Image (cartoon, rainbow, N blue to C red; front, top):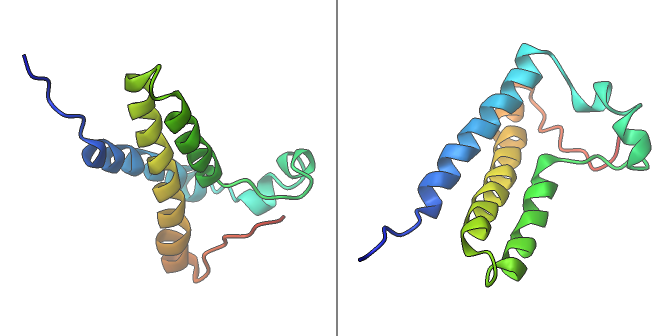
Length: 110
């Protein structure tokens, strides 16, 4: 009995698109801007460092690698979500924001 292989590329593209749509709705639909709207709250908690959602994606990848022997199915999804968060953030800053605002707004600090 053979199982279908897990399609990392397909799931990563789907979830990257979902994350990017949510990000664009918040940015353009709700008119939220990280620098303006979260600097006084989250910025205080992070000591002025700006937290991009790609950071959470990058944290998921080594965690998945460590836990893969024990939780293989969960780790497959952690890899997909980690890559999706990473690619969504890069696409948002270096394609979407650059196109619509003329600047990538990829600041490391508030």
